[in-house]
Length: 299
Image 1 (spheres, rainbow, N blue to C red):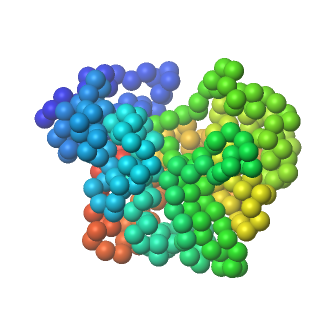
Image 2: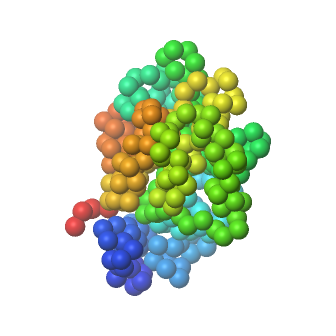
Image 3: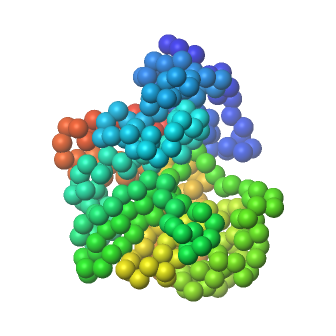
């Protein structure tokens, strides 16, 4: 057994009361040491640069690493950090490009069989020009265009979380200014979309809900500006052990007039569906990888 990274022996119960962050860090360190059998960088969940540049943070199949390289050259958080969620959308969604029918069947489980076909799957997709939408460069972790059974076009905007919680606003950033400016594009889209009950508006900008809100109104802005699209669903996917996003999602959905525009989904549910509908051995290998790589066992 190789060194798993001693910094993960203790957890901070004040910031991580469920212990999921500690357990996930240890899980990724163990995966690197005992499955990949690779040395670690400064921390146990980091690959050394040489191994990271070879794509060991990504599934070896379905051209996943090719998609990563086409998106961005070597970047340590993306290529080397096994814990950070930035790399996960590539592993979760690029393989579906090889079988769009399979992708349709999986998503129809959650979309009540309203998807007629999946047309486009993109990773890290910022609609452009940004001025047309939220004017801030917000991107979807994964983006899916589909044809609805009513013959119109729809979008699924996906945000992927692993151990992350809320993010603080960076002082003096454009986002901070936009969030605190009632005339900004954020509030313009929020009001025009009519997604939310009035009493929710002041809560949406808080650390707990801001990320979910921004991703949701990014999709709303596409519906407003690009008339070819008639449906949008904001999907947040996270492990069931991430209690923060489980609770945040439960609260956030109460703010919505049309609750079907937001879908909180656990990794566990998603992988169970993928497994149930698995079309062949190559996808079965991918599903097994995702289970082994990301699902943290309950203690």
